[in-house]
Image (tube, rainbow, N blue to C red; front, side):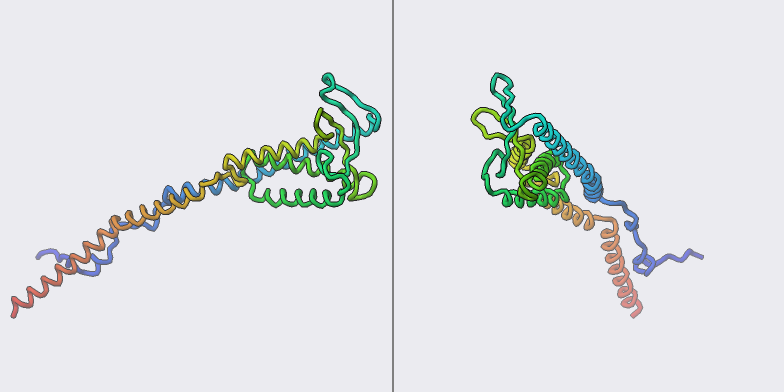
Length: 254
């Protein structure tokens, strides 16, 4: 007695999977994308913490320096340092930074509020350390001058900002103005280098799209050459052979 053999085109042969890919792990592209998202998720709280720390430091230094100037220097007192290159004297400014636009206090108060809101909204996408420092400087400086406009004389939201630093051929300013200017210069440098607030660089999105297209093309080629695809072709060939054998058997019987 001979052992029964399973026909080549039987359901057992056709239905038997050659490989089980359901348990396959993620592709390298998926691993890289998932790791990047995890890193970005952890980076955002840290960058916001840096922004808050820089803003708080700039605000604190500005408030303390103005308090010392108001308590130690009168409008008529001047302190000359470095051979006259630096002069300390108290002035009141109703305009913008560096005594620009005096007489438009309420307008600049509104602008300062808008700047603060814009920085806070931008911080939602913050994942870059240099941008965190930049926005922190501008936020701290804006809050420093805004504090004067809200709480100092002559009236709320119409207060005059305390300026006290004077150098030759330059308007009198304060540390809040300096923080705003430093943040603005840093923003220009970062933008010129193509670094964005979210930590990416200009052109990275296009590279990611090209990489995704290449990965998809590679997955397609891999799927076409996979054992499952080869098994499907082999099964179809076995079915064709089985059909030919049945026809030959019928012709021989006839």
